[in-house]
Image 1 (cartoon, rainbow, N blue to C red):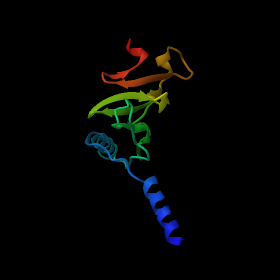
Image 2 (cartoon, helix red, strand yellow):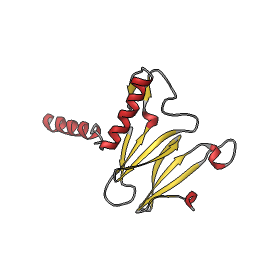
Image 3 (cartoon, rainbow, N blue to C red):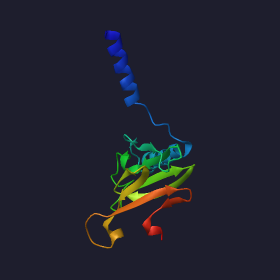
Image 4 (cartoon, one colour):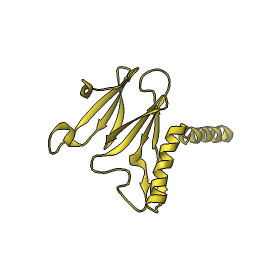
Length: 149
């Protein structure tokens, strides 16, 4: 019985802590962020937890990568990666990056369609304050939003 419990605990730990395998492009983006901190700011870089998320945004059974620079920290500056307008969110689709600027983001499933929802700066909604959001879906032609019309 102890062996079974130990095996279950080990498997649970392994799956909970399994790394997200990064593409060469996402590794380069993270290395560039590290370089900006270490060389440019003479600081200590930390990638943070969950800086890379993988999710199938278009239903093609291939995960896209989302690199969230809000997870990055540099010990010598607080504004290297993010500012009042938000933080760069880079989505890699077929080795091509698309960058968004957002304060927060989330992928929402709406009847099987994945939607990238971004909390963006209030000025994008044409006012001085209050929440502002933008939604994108990934199609075979790229990201699509009402703002594209």
